[in-house]
Length: 294
Image 1 (cartoon, rainbow, N blue to C red):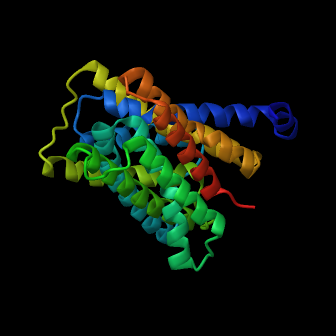
Image 2 (cartoon, rainbow, N blue to C red):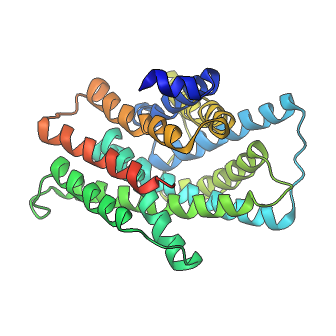
């Protein structure tokens, strides 16, 4: 099967998509390693992302000239992304990078629901099946009895689901802004980064968090989240995905939540048995089915 896919797809875009997925998979690891609060981690992540995106924009010779309506949409997208980070970074610390990332990828389900509610797009029986499979996988990972879960785990799961909700709203606004001819990928993400940085910069002191980065390790982790996972990872994926079929791209992008769970097991000694592994497989299958389009 691999040789057949390679024969149909240009090898270099496939490599870029793989590399981009790997870069993004380290994002929750960087956040977990940074010895700062969840909100200040989001602030520095988007600050470093914005600075590196600006450098990339200058190196490419692009100009930041965006229609006002598109700026409003992108600013709204950046606001939702900032709230998404506030939820996701807390979920990472509560239930670990692996489960928090899997829950964040539930955005494919909420995006479909929002598209049904606001855009009147149909929901297929296959999508409903995908939701049921995802819930079954989640039950296998966390246990069937919600009441007996500790408060920390329950809150982490709730925040992970909230992450997916806010991220789906971010995706819809971002896609809407990309319909504007004045918007390209790098400039769009630069505006999103600025809006997210501003909001997180305002929220951080309100949550009694500090902007102080306590050590070199935390600085490198935050820079990794902003530059490696956000700017480099996103740039590799966005430049490659248009050259690859949706089916192949969907499978390759599943590496991101898969590897995030693997890193959680390797780096943070997450206890994982056969039920948890099967639950992860079910969730990944459901995410792929839920995002599949003919």
